Image (tube, rainbow, N blue to C red; front, top):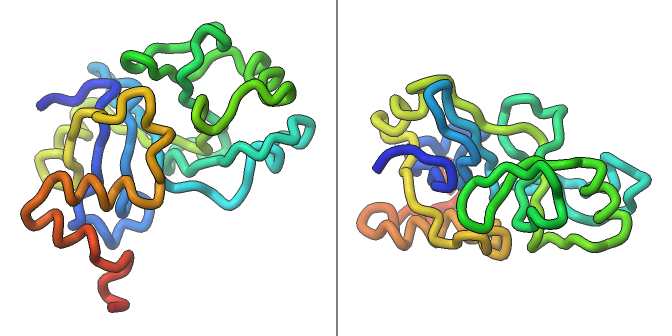
Length: 183
């Protein structure tokens, strides 16, 4: 399987010591000769959109997207008809777009957590870096079986459920504590 936008990366249990990516699921939103970009979809932060942009008063959660440019807000959505300038990731999923429209839709409460997910920062790889990490078994590349409904999957259980789906030794990791050394 080759990297491609729309696929997901599942962090291998071997990277548990890496607090940034341990038990992460990353949606790849771009993949080309220059590198890859993705967002960690299962690590919510302890604040909401209104904490970053008080005029909105929206309680949409903010997620940790990755270690790159953590002072920038990004978003992935499934409503391109409402958000001009969206970039297609895969069937039914888009990223970026006109942020002024996002602000208006948020103020008018016309979007919800199943339509859009906000991220601070992103995960990025230079050309061939992701392939090297895949070869060293840091990541498991997988199809996004959830398609456009990926935001409706519980962030608390998505990594565990993917471990169970992979079976074998991975299913053992599905019930391991977050920090095995504290067991």
